[in-house]
Length: 237
Image (cartoon, rainbow, N blue to C red; front, side):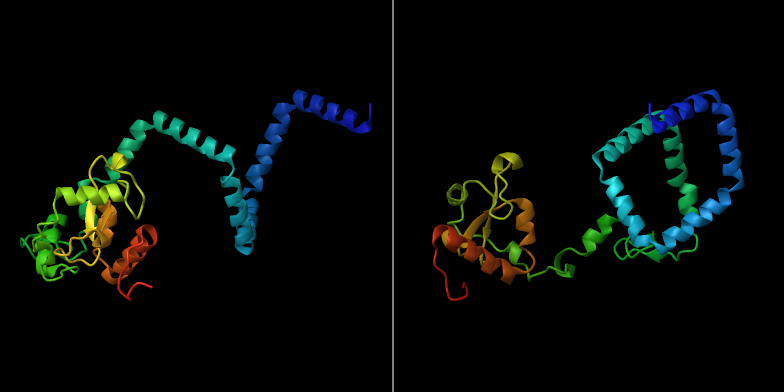
C-alpha cells in the first residue's frame, strides 16, 4: 500500500466517525465568515464580468444541466401549484392594477369616447380607427378593385400545379396548411392574369408582399425566370 492510499483510507474512516463534529465546525465557520465570502464574490464578479458570463453560459449549455432544470421545474410546479396560483392572483388582481394606474392621466378613446389610459380603450377601437384611409398601408383602395375574368379557379389550379403546391418563399406544402395556397399577382395588377405574372404563396408570405412592393416584384420575376425560363423586361437583371 502506498502512502497516498493509506492517507485516503484514513481520511474516510476519520470522516465517517466524526461526521457530526465536522459539520458543526463547518456551520460555525460559515456563519462567522459569510459576509466576507459574499463581498469577495461580488468583487471578483465585478472585476471579471466577461469570464464569469462565459463560464455560466458553458455550464448552462451542458445537456445534463438542461435536463436537471427541466426536471426540477416540473417537480416544483407539481408540488407548488397552489402557491403559484395565489401568487398569480395577487399580481393580476384589480386592486394592484388600480394602484398602478392611479398616477396616470386618463384620456378619451378617439373612437367610442370612453375613458382610456392610451389613445384607445381596446384593440377593437384601434383596429376600427386604422382601417381604410387611416391605415399606413393604404394604397387608394386597390384591394377593392375587381379581378379579371381569366382569374378563375381553373387558372389558380394551373399555377398551383406548376409550383407543385408549394409556397415559393417558405416552401411549405399544401397538406401541412390544410387549405389552398393563394395566388399572388407579381406586378400588383389584378387585370394582368397570366402565368408569367402569378405565383403561389401561403397566407403569411402573401401578407409580407403588401410592404416593399418594388423589391418583391423584382424578386419574384427573377425567381420565375431562373426556375421556368420566363422572359421579362430589362428591369430584371
